[in-house]
Amino acid sequence: MNGKFIVFEGVEGCGKTTQIQLCSQWLESLNISVVLTREPGGTELGKDLRRLLLEKLPNKPVGEVTELLLYAADRAQHIEEELKPNLATGKYILCDRYTDSTISYQGYGRGLNMSIINQLNQISTGGLESDLTIWLDVDVEVGLSRKRGQATLDRIEQETIAFHRRVQQGYTELAGSYPSRIMRVDGTSSQDIVQKSIQEILQNRLFS
Ligand code: T5A
Image 1 (cartoon, rainbow, N blue to C red):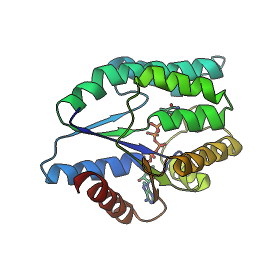
Image 2 (image 1 turned 90 degrees about the vertical axis):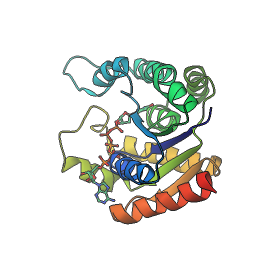
Image 3 (image 1 turned 60 degrees about the vertical axis):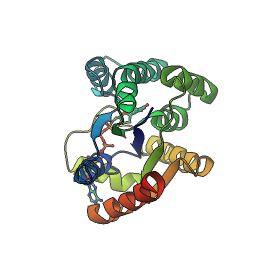
Image 4 (image 1 turned 45 degrees about the horizontal axis):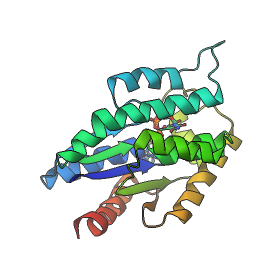
């Protein structure tokens, strides 16, 4: 595979969507061919799975294991339909969330068995890892207050603050365990400063 697979991660409202857009504009200005995608929802099937996962409907609860399996199904489809073909043709993929989300949300947040999560991640990805993961680190209160100002909160955003803190702990521990793959960026700075930090990391890690 010749392209590059760059993932953006973090708690709710950390600024992934904003930074992916800015990063895409910058890469295109360098004549690099870019694909923007996300999990869940990076394929047609995935859009339906995203709706099932994020809509909060009264009397229609989503079980924790069901949730885990739906994220895995979304990812398996995404890899075959979107990630592998674009990497094979040399594209730079900017992906909003990937396996570290499952570890942080379903593992740390829900408390599901980590070895099952790791096995499912292996099955759904076939071993495909990101070339680089940018972790936008913001306090969960800051991220959620940004989201509250924006729209109604989805099913997962409506979880307790304790849940979101466990998710944040997940990202912190993952970044400590995989220092060469996961790069922490302070997401509380202004959008321009955050973007400059990301561009510096990409220049050092992918272009040099
Ligand atoms: N999930 C996902 C799992 O539980 N397991 C999994 O395996 C996977 C893959 C997906 C949900 O699914 C869960 C995690 C999630 O709960 P999503 O697609 O991440 O949801 O949700 P989105 O709503 O798209 O994204 P976020 O809520 O995380 O928001 P973003 O994209 O991080 O933030 P963004 O850029 O939209 O910004 C939010 C607001 O903040 C402002 C923006 O203008 C916007 O208003 N903002 C800033 N304000 C101040 N300073 C900055 N630096 C700012 N940057 C952005």
